[in-house]
Length: 493
Image 1: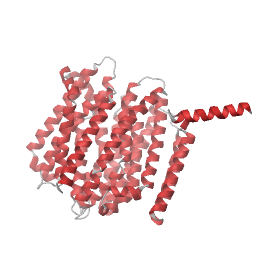
Image 2: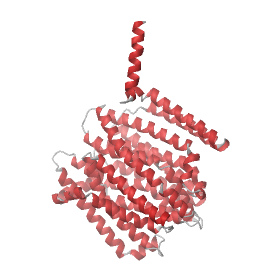
Image 3: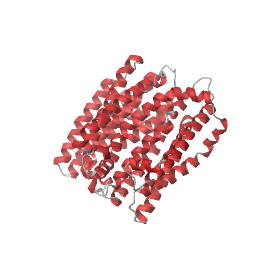
Image 4: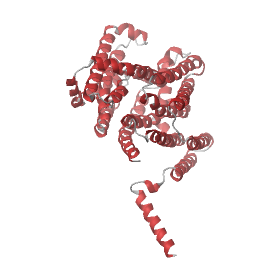
């Protein structure tokens, strides 16, 4: 239980920075959608370029974050040497990437559909290289359990991004999407420089033999990472090329803006991952590790389902995050959120092959899921547009999740509380459909009131079944006093 409390504390710190940061970043969505109309397709450009950037960052880090955690906790390895070797390796690859893009900027820009605006490409190339290089120092902060510094740097990045965007798009009245990329470049450079203390770890040098062993471990993780990020961004990369219409950038912008509302699930999963990954690797060999993973899975699902109901129930309010000319895409939000929950479950299921060094299985599961997503997009997007993107992600994550569970139970069986998870899932589905029906047929204020009551009902079930208030640090004292008083009364009686 003490270990789980430590995990909860770190998750709170990471989560606070992630959720606050992402929430503040949401300020950019109404800003962009207000200043860049849906018809212009400008937000579609931003959506497409950031999707490409996410894929490139995975390629440039080539699984070294997870590999760093694994090797720095291995007996006989020098953690500082592991860190410097990983950092130099990622830095070298990133610099080579920037040089290649600058050398071939014209054909690359033309191939991506930005022949008239090559600055989009070279600015984002430098930005993702900086982001890849800072990934290893940030992993080091997590490994050293320096959650506060990690969170502070994350929030500094977000704050600087928001301030610069407000200056250009609001105070200066700009509307050019290119400035979103320029601002991102400045912020990435500042944050990398802010990790100068960690970057001093370069003095421990580069170990070629160690790097070969690390790459042997990481290449399946790279494939896993490519497939995993394609699961998230393949639709946004492919959409302009396969959509059967002349308004591809416009439709992509609508889909991208509405999908932002669903990113509460990505925030929760990311916060959990930041704390959970070093926690699990640090407990390798502990007898209660499997039990801890089972409990962590249960509580992860419970609280993501609660978040899911909050977003669906309060959609009449949350939709104002984006401009009204983007609202037609709001129907994708419940689907995208459900896919994000399955992605989080899949991450929780992934440790059986990471801890046993069978990372090839992760590549297989993610590869199959990615294939489902890509094929579904190629087949259905020309006919159904961005709704096919949402359902393709749902199907791909679902397949990966089920495969990981079935195979994992064969190689490393863990007794997950499936009955409890099933009860919460069924209750969520019933309440969600009720909320959606209310929003369709009942005025806004009454539907919000009833939806809030449904959410409170779900929270009550959580408290009664799995999260008693008496277990909380402050509230628990009140309940303990109440119990003591009642016991005293009963004894006197």
